[in-house]
Image 1 (cartoon, protein in one colour):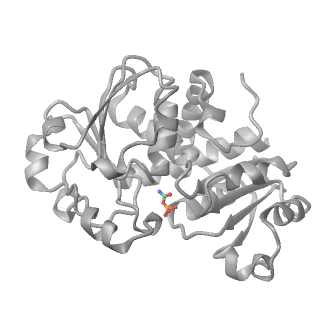
Image 2 (tube, helix red, strand yellow):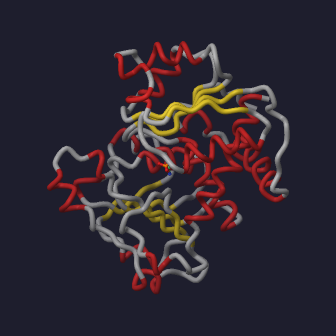
Image 3 (tube, helix red, strand yellow):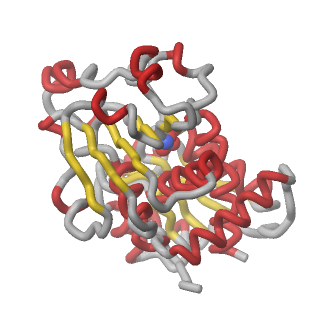
Length: 302
Ligand code: CP
């Protein structure tokens, strides 16, 4: 079994053996709605320089359910000594003396890697700007396994802002562990997947601007938000924000056993009327994050 320490990229966890182990642990914890004391005496520091609901609360809940404790700084750019000019590297070295693991969310791509380079305790990338979000990819792949019972050979349409969408960047790396995937990337021409996330993929990808054509054959539709906060020009965001809206008409085109996913938060790209359809898995997906992160923290810290 590959030994992992820091998780700055999905590449750090892109091993079938490791994923299977984490998913088995997550499923056991989920089936029993388990709490245990396996991480009693351990402390997780959540350091957030960018907003979060799911990543922050699910990591904190995961640590508490495992008997550990949590230190947290929300809006760390304002409420930590970053405000006084302290560097990220200095902050990480200081927190190393207080916590056994750090979850970092930061608006700059590469920030997690910079932090990991000075961290002796495991550093988990909870999203670094338009870079990566490896634990979101982990819970996304777990959700595929839970919803469909298999991952090899799936036909997945990934829709939206593939340029800035860090969850997609990490997801493609993890899906590459599996065989015979048909990955169809749907985005406006201005928001296509950057070359750096394409070049090492083993599975074939197709790129298109047309979502409708993908729907009748997709096993999974993975919708993403157009990432307003990453645009330099407000006008460009306004022009692109409604590029893809998944509503009742789109639902009617899907296969009976297809699955609709979204890392959330959503804005308007999935209509609320879709939520009650049993194929809509995005709230289940977010809840799966708790158990996947429990399994991951146990793996890193036990
Ligand atoms: N999916 C996700 O990362 O959500 P948050 O930004 O709320 O953490």
